[in-house]
Length: 72
Image (tube, rainbow, N blue to C red; front, top):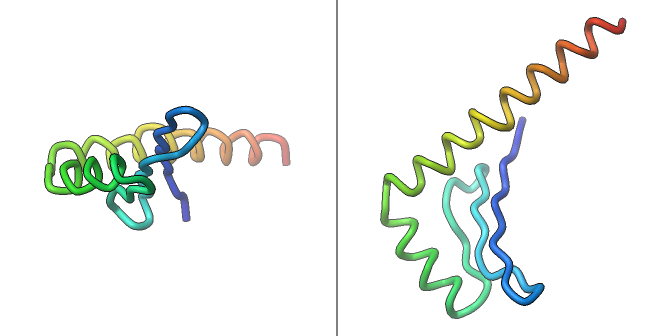
């Protein structure tokens, strides 16, 4: 399967991450945990991240797969 990860970093430290396999945000700092709670309760915000999986990952994978087939 395809996994989409959207990480937010401040001062070289990841503080929050969206993982499409988990389907929600996970916070790694106090600030990140607070944001994760807020963002996870917003269906629109979660929907935007899930749409990125479709837009970026699945579209890119289909193009890459097609290019591989063209070369074989």
